Length: 429
Image 1 (cartoon, helix red, strand yellow):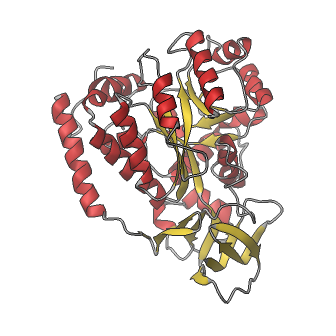
Image 2: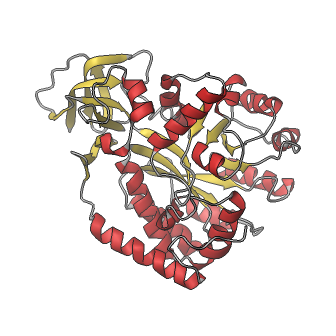
Image 3: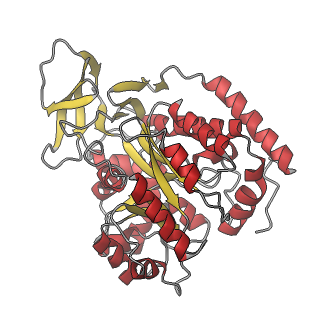
């Protein structure tokens, strides 16, 4: 089946294709086959993209989606508070159905906000049923998802058998694929880190790992010394690591994921966007968790842009768009498949309104997206050529029922944990 997106402002994120003030995108069998000023395709379904920006879908490469039911409760928390509240108090009360709902609704939120690819960094693994429920939640939502299986935070239990079990059900060709979430050397022994890297190599999985430093430790140098830096790993946060260590990551071909809202609110340190660029890395951006931050990438873009401009003025709006499209696709090992409107790539495409009062008149599309973008502009979303959001509404999704179910899930978990849900509870972090 062919689909023709016609008459939009095309921001392709492919230097060979370029941008078009007025352009068409032709899709056939889920794949982009042509991008041009005008395309004649009389046998295609036509989607009118007039007054729309047509661009590749956004990519979020680090989100703890299972926590969706508790959005906003951690707005005032430090990271220590978060650990006590989410992992020490609430997570033990999660049933598999709670994990399923969190992943389903969180993934729907991301699609609604234009995120066509999302890495779900899962660390609520209390048993096989929880992991299976998380995968089912991703599969039940329209979108390209990467299930990044990690050990439950703070645990030392071996995970190899469970990772192999989940991997046996998740190949590399479907809309839901797999990665391995590593325990960092700050959380376990370097021998365990090496074992998990070896497991990832055995199963052909890319890896993602949270990295912290107080400015005195050298976690990246430690990994390098043990031969554990590679081009298939994304390092999350990495605030306060040295410039020398950033260059080690660049030399290894690794990637870095910056979660600016959470990092600033929870006291991680300044986001590493500018320093990563200076070291030769292409930063990527991520939401992290919705108890502390908004779940859309537009707010993430805006925070990262404003902070780095305030620090040294080094970024341009087009840089930010690359971070959440082609650069993030590269970090997920999917740059050959997504991240730009390139003929031959999967048709993961979003249409953003330019006739909305919050953005018109649009003079510079990239600047408008970065400085004023918001989920309300996301008019249409296609994943692998399938329309999953049309005219601002998710297709075939009963949000009212899901809202009631997620609210009930939140209330049950909070009651089991013995905490109020009115914002009055502050964990003793």
